[in-house]
Length: 449
Image (cartoon, rainbow, N blue to C red; front, side):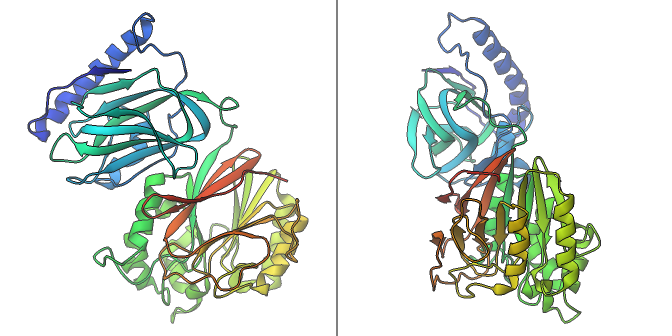
């Protein structure tokens, strides 16, 4: 059932927005009165489960009108899609499978005349919970729903104005399986092999597209697994290419260098260090560590794995770690089914991490996506092994899969994208999301050692 507090059809967008800010407060008051009057159809007792959850969208009008604004609880912020194009969508990751009973949408002047409310277990296959064919904006309050899934999407198929789609708030009510998500949960976006020497004016340029996706997810922070800038990673190249896309969230980025960062004519890592500064050298070295929640993250420079100083530092860092869960990332993977294949330079590091009961390793270098089952440094499947992800699809030209390695569970070459990692206090999982927003792979759920 839908309760609709309609708004008059917008004539001119300018001017109406200020009126809508006032109207939004009225709608909120009306919605509160409806909830306080249990005999009214649409009264709901299930809790709000979407507030502050990671959100993505098919497009955004500007970087300040991102998908997260529709789930932040602030009636003054909003998501807006690109103008003049159908269809468009916005979706939220509820963090776990949930039974959805109610969805409340507060539209801006750019509303949907036709749309569907959909749920999905995996972000790929969608089931409609509600369908609108004659929307008139204002507040749409869908109650009495009965759908189950981790992801919820508002899929607009026809605009109500000449503009795009825009929501002040999208509120999802229901019950999350097993109760609320574990404390200390957060999301991270990861990618390697990113900025080719091209810009958004080139339709074949991929890193502007993966950057737009990464920005729309709006994670706690971003990881890069090396080869951030092609081909020689000069400072001028960083400024001309990487900075125009992934540089938009540089302050939230935790990078490591790849081999291309060593090709700089000004000296190995010269442009990389000049561009990222203390972000890449927070502890005065090209490798460092930090904590988030119950996780210890270790950022390593695989260009110098043959130097004792970094290995000695790694051992001391792990010995001092007090967190249960450990993730490490660098450029060259020990295991890969791509063109570069397995790189033994990383084996000494794997041995150290395995002895410390590390959980997760992320790498780039090969330009494809791949995930491996838990294994030891010798490539033997082990329940207490380390899970490895190759995520080198940030924007550089894809490499084909050449020699499938033991314990490789999933391989994707072609669709550019990012790895969206969901960390909890005692476990983790992830999805590989293509630049068009489609989920191409969903991992198992892992518990920390």
